[in-house]
Image 1: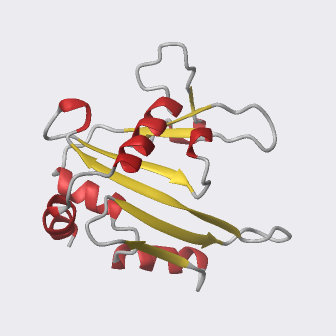
Image 2: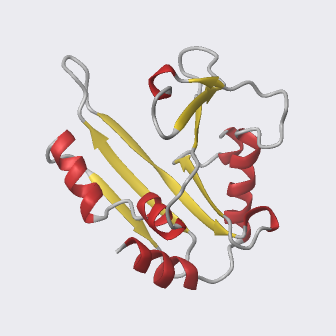
Amino acid sequence: MNKNFVNIVLNNLFSLELNELANIDRCKIALGRGNKTKIWKRLPGSLNEPVEMYQSGYKGEGTKVFVKGVAIIDEEVEDNLGNIMHFNSNQKMNGHIQMNGNTERTWCYGDYSHTFHYSLEVNSPAPFKNRKFSGYQTFMKGFDNKPGSYVVAIYDDSKDTTKL
């Protein structure tokens, strides 16, 4: 399923729109790609996990926190890319229902677009309300002039993407 989604849907899209390229660049800048002065702190819960998780940018309540994951992938890229991009695959929907019950999880994209919109609701322990997340994923093949590379920029619903 994932290979089919990547090979048939994602790899047969038209060129990225200018705003899609701009959103990928904004994420690249926000994450400090190539910036030697941005400090990333390893998240303790990821010390023995296959994906190393890092956090940067926390300045107090109400500010955005940047999190990035780094992994060495020894599987075919189509499987991993399909898993990331196909937000409502049967596997992801089953996992969501098992963990959160019958809460919202949506995902959609326009024909020939590299940008997908997602939303989901996750259960929170009492007395807290459930948390809702929504945003966009923009996909690009050939990142940094490497034809076989892929990037997925994930950002929130904020209309002001300069504040990523």
